[in-house]
Amino acid sequence: MDIVLIPRHTGAAQNLQFFSPRGLSQLVHLASWLASQGSPSDQYVVVPRGQPDLIPLLAEFAQVLHSAGKLNFILAIEDVSLEAMETVAASGVSELVICADETRAFDVMAQAALGQFLRRGFAKTCSIQLWLPDTRDGRELERSLSFLECGLGPNAIREPRFPLDDSLEMRLLRKPPPRELSDAAPACQFFSNSLTINASAGIQACARHAPDERLGSFLEESPEVLIYRKGYSSRLLQGSPICRSCFYSGRFHWPKPKTEAIEALLQTGMDAGPEFAEEA
Ligand code: SF4
Image (cartoon, rainbow, N blue to C red; front, side, top):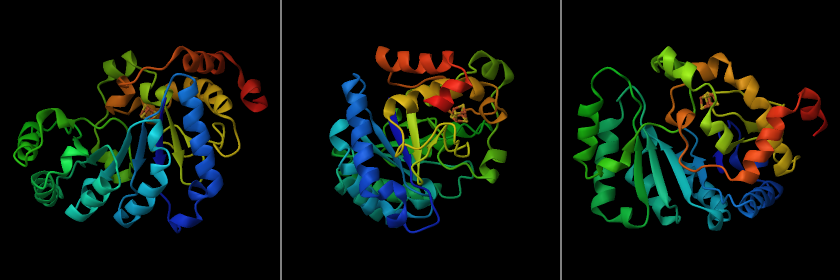
């Protein structure tokens, strides 16, 4: 089970519960517990949109977790610069994911930085992935080719795995999946294979959903309880309009399968009633 950190917040980073010594020790505990269940977690750190200056702090924080799995940083395309990419690479991050938006407004700027980054050889230590949303307007191929011309390999371009920071504007631009697809895959693979932790240390379904008190805080609850609660909440999510309109690839497929131990915990939560979630 992977860990997604979304330290998006309007306040100063050092005031966030997420960055407290307790937050850090709980994260280490969570990552170690997952590893002890045969499920070493990869971490995805989502750099808050418009705040690339937080990269050094986030990198320092995430390094503590690094030994548990692969460390990925996710940067919105509007925040891509050579400096930001070099800072990520110098921090020992295994993979930098650039997440493009539907507008294409930042493509040229990002391509210039990406080309320089690749020519300088940083990709030997920090690989690059580009998440290109499927806008289904017939221009995806042309857009992919323009990024390939910067030196990116074809395997480095894929659809976004999960939502980062869906503004209302982006939600309106993003087209929902065809009805047959959402009916065929009502459950979310991303939700059941990862824990998304927000700036206040709450567990969220994902960045498209508001924080959900039913899921609890990772500062207050044991990893077992958090996963039970995810199991219970998955039934509620399946029919929610937000999930049914979601077309992120992680919804349909997550690259790392769950272990039997984690699956059993989730299933226990799914089989339990609301009383269980309250008692847990
Ligand atoms: S299906 Fe729901 S939980 Fe899963 S990524 Fe989409 S909005 Fe989030």
